[in-house]
Image (tube, helix red, strand yellow):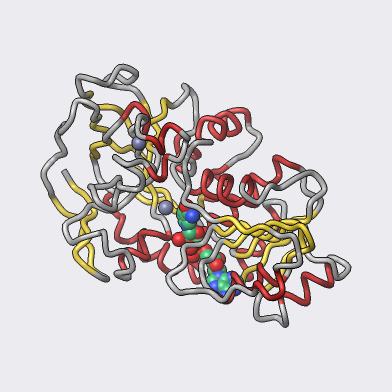
Amino acid sequence: MKALVYKGPAQKAWEEIADPVLEAPTDVIVRITHTTICGTDLHILKGDVPTVTPGRVLGHEGVGVVEEVGAAVRNFKRGDPVLISCITACGSCPNCKRQMYAHCENGGWILGNTINGTQSERVRIPHAEHSLYRIPSGANEEALVMLSDILPTGFEIGVLYGQVKPGDTVAIVGAGPVGMAALLTAQFYSPARLIMIDMDANRLEVAKKFGATDVIRVGDGDAVQKVKALTDGLGVDVAIEAVGIPATFDICQSILAPGARLANVGVHGKSVELHLENLWIQNVSISTGLVNTNTTPLLLKTVQSGSIDPTRLITHRFPLAKIEEAYEVFGNAAREKALKVILSA
Ligand code: NAD
Ligand code: ZN
Ligand code: ZN
């Protein structure tokens, strides 16, 4: 079969490799029908993720069809259409028992990291009973690809940890796919204001179409002052950090109203200065986290019912065999006006 193989920093190839085989009775082999590329895959190609070693097939998002089933798997059979979660969960370790699947002792984020991933014609999914979701008949499979990672990430680590409530003023810093997923899912809770902050004017225009009430372009003056001006000097109830650099965390910690929540979603590579000398008196809380994907069943229902339409995040489509072209587009997202790219077999 063909797969996108990581060859070391800045190197990858779409090439022939051996088909995956069942290695444990809890495994399933899935034939990929649709997959996508994540910002994390770009981090890997920059050499930022040392757990990914040369020879690894990339990708942790996708949908497909079950081809082979291990002897211990009861709830899937050959031919079932399935959604692949970016988080593998064994379902029985202490962390799985408390729904902290991101920290599963036998899984967590392993696909396209420590085991071969989904940017491939076929993939082996360990602990399949807890790591795959059956796709309801008639579902839009492209929409469901957004449920492998970005929708649960924006929802769980941004909106739920940020405790967005009716009437809240919410600022989201970072209008990439993850920030947009937070923007879409925050609207489940009817916040009064959704302020989107980014440096990319095109993404901010898209954010307005997705429900942002206000947008602030970093670079056009002081973003913190602009948030204060929009909120009568008070600040926001929830600040969601969806970039992962010190400058954007700093915006978040500088715009909090008393009692506010700062939900950090971005992956940070550098240490950040926390201004506790200002924050200690503000009754604020700060949360962090890796997506658990424990809300995937709930999100599946919201997509099925039409309460949210994640296909709005898809800007480009390619055949799976053209994945290297898709990386070029996704890797130059501002120039290409790209959010999510879909690859279909
Ligand atoms: P992305 O790179 O597509 O989006 C980031 C956005 O930040 C871009 O729109 C960019 O224009 C904007 N930006 C960059 N510098 C800025 C600045 N100085 N001021 C304002 N805006 C700025 O990334 P994404 O795929 O949307 O992911 C966002 C973050 O979430 C990344 O750090 C990613 O690694 C992380 N992530 C976290 C989890 C988790 O479980 N916690 C899961 C997936 C992704
Ligand atoms: Zn991802
Ligand atoms: Zn586990």
